[in-house]
Image 1 (cartoon, rainbow over the protein chains, first blue to last red):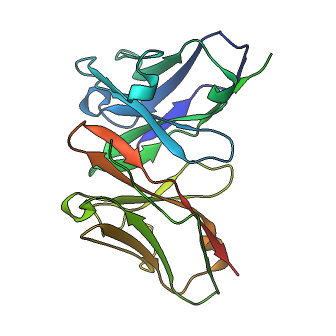
Image 2 (image 1 turned 45 degrees about the horizontal axis):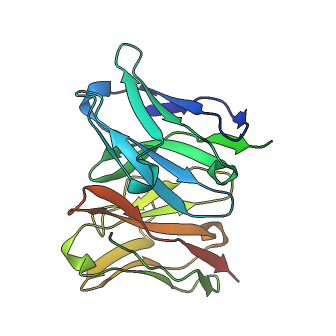
Amino acid sequence: QVHLVQSWAEVKKPGASVKVSCKASGYTFTGYHIHWVRQAPGQGLEWMGRINPNSGGTNFAQKFQARVTMTTDTYFSTAYMELSRLGFDDTGVYYCARVERGSFFYWGQGTLVSVSS
Amino acid sequence: SYVLTQPPSVSVAPGKTARITCGGNNIGSTSVHWYQQKPGQAPLLVIYYDSDRPSGIPERFSGSNSGNTATLTIFRVEAGDEADYYCQVSDSSSDHVVFGGGTKLTVL
């Protein structure tokens, strides 16, 4: 059974960076891309980008291109999303998700990132 | 970039039919997926590839896609269907994922 388990909530100051992890289990980690989706408080879903755990190749939404880094550790079947130069509007819940049948079949539980001075 | 347009809100009485639309330029030529999200929870896939249902999703949930509009239809709406619903596609030109703005379904 596929599971994506994310790291705990984080509180960061403006200008800092945050690194969120997503540990996968129940399938071959290198066989499927991991995507990251953000949801600001009271707002909709926003796609940030994806990483191919097999090649390390990435594809980012233009909005995050300059500030986001996505990596994987295939030994631990874990994906990471790091967002730098945080602003107050980066507060939100960050989800990892895995595609199957063209859609986000599997989601992590979400990680709340709060940016506060 | 590709834009998906959803109505902000839809209201329906219990037992009636709810229809949530997702508009996009020639959206009928691509696959649309739909997610249900309840407060404090991660999104849940309810329809993929326009009209397929994952196991465990009631048959009351149905999808269609043609022309410039995709539609999620929920028959015999129940109080438990009250949630936010999002449509999603993959933009073939950029290979990026796009979500609609979301529709809040209220069961009266």
